[in-house]
Length: 153
Ligand SMILES: [Zn+2]
Image (cartoon, rainbow, N blue to C red; front, side, top):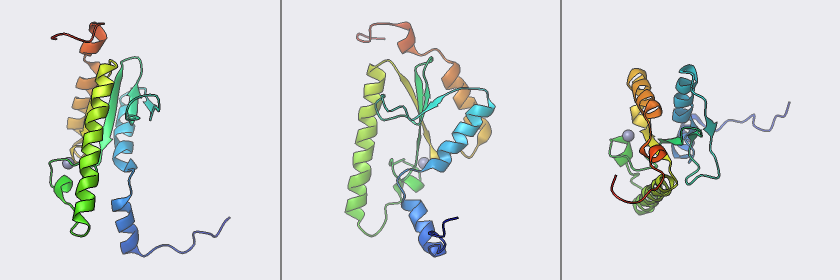
C-alpha cells in the first residue's frame, strides 16, 4: 500500500481543518442514513438543479439541503461564531453563502421544486428529524398541483 499519508497532522491541526473544510459531509450522512432506514429513495447532488441539492427526490420534486450552521450563517450559537481572526473575510464569505442559498431556493421553487433546509444543529434529535422528513416528503407540494406558477396561491 502507499505510504504517502503515513504522517498524520497534529491532532489540533486536523481538528481545525475539519472545522474549516467547506463540504461538511457528516451531517448529510446522518440524514441519508435515516432516510434510507425509512425506505425513501433519493439521488445525490444533482448537478442539473440550482444549488446542486444534497438529497433529491425526483418523482416528488423535492430536495433537501443539509446546511452547516457556520457556513450558512444559521441564527444558532454555532452559526454566529465568527472567527476572531480575519473576521471580515469570514463574515463576507458567510454573507455570500446566505445570499446564494436564497437565490438557489428561489430558482428551485420557480422550477417547481420544494426544498427543505435542515441545519446541522437540528439533526441531533433523531425522532424529531424523522417526523420532519415524513411531513416534508409525504405532503403534496403545491407546485405539483398547480401547473402555472404565477398568481396568488
Ligand atoms: Zn444551527
